[in-house]
Image (tube, rainbow, N blue to C red; front, side, top):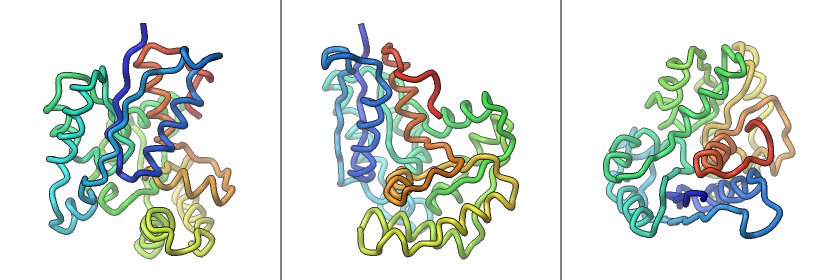
Length: 236
């Protein structure tokens, strides 16, 4: 019997849907009844995580914990969070419930280590970059992390917030190929789309660069942890 997956969602709404679609796509199933039971709490009241980490913004933990507890009470056997930056607050959330909470950055680091990747480029919010969410996880796995320079990092933030979240600026306006070239020059063997809005942007831009999508890694890990068969052998 498979387990029920709970999603602490709303960070942002499109990223939550992207994760759910990937869980469905990565589950080996020939009929509805072979798919996983997934419960999502799309809690858009959760304050911005980067603002909280870097700019003394509102604390997102109380709302994240509310979601976690709601999901556990609804019958979730495990939790996942489709927001990389939110994993800065992982210990607070995991400590508030009695069920496992998968860690996106650690799962991703494990995949890179298994593949023999030694240097990975990290595209993420300023909060994720400066808090060390991926730096720490990758270092523990023996993988060196490299990041865009300051000017290009501002473009990454624009792509995430203005391009995907707000839909205020066309995605084509952002110099994504320059950003990727910068990471390659620093020795990146793989690029991590370490913000859950970035896989959406890359898909819409038709980019098929040599990257790893942590949202897909998380979905793959959730399918496995729930006891279902995966449709593919690995999350690449």
